[in-house]
Structures are given as C-alpha cells and as structure tokens.
Image (cartoon, rainbow, N blue to C red; front, side, top):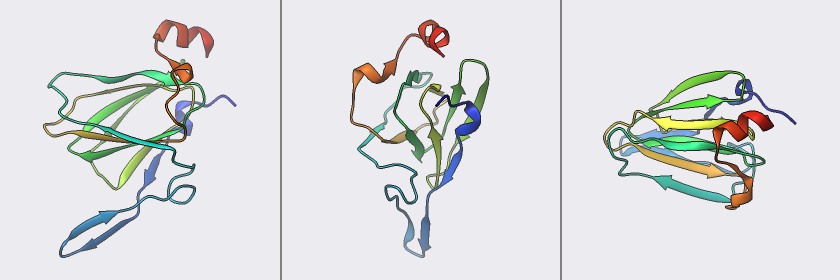
Length: 135
C-alpha cells in the first residue's frame, strides 16, 4: 500500500491528570495502532541540529515531544507538510514511505519514538533522491 502525508495523523495519547502531575500511557494495538516492538528517544540535541532525514519501507512510528518542542517535515515524494509537536499527550503517526526531517528543537527537546519493528538497516531510505525515484 502506498501511503501519503494525509495518512500521517496526530494520535491522542491517553492522559490522566491529578494534583501530583500528569501520566500518559500507551498500549500496543489500543492507544497506538500497531504492536510496539522498539522504543527509543533522542535528547541533548544541539541548537540548529536536525534529526531524521530518512524514510522507512515497512515501519510505522509514533513520534512524541516527551519534553520541549520541535517541528517535523513529512514528505511523501509529492507533497510536504510541517507539524509542530510540543505536547507529550499528542503523537504523530508516521506511515511507511514517508520522508521525515525533525528540526527547530527547543532547549530540552526530547524526541520519543515508538516503532512497529525492530531495527533493520534494510528498511531505510537514507538518500532523498533515491527515495524520490522509488516512491
């Protein structure tokens, strides 16, 4: 199936709030529309740095601003869209075949990613020109 940027949507992460703070939780195939097989996060990102710069062939991801904020540019080879994330109870679902670039990090910005597959280098498009040719 060929996905477009229109298939990349904001997912509400369930949130419980009390006078002691907030708690958000995720569950595979419930609040997240796939089985989570890998979780990772990036932090201490230098000012002006960019992350991402790739697409996946089969992998689904949810990207959350666990702390701070950043913007994500998504690209399906024909259309692009910019999304700003700054709320840990909102996540961006990124479908396979979507190029992503993450930038404009605030101080303390932390990117939390939940992925549908284990790491597999063969699942990556790392060259934008090759990505454009294949999609």
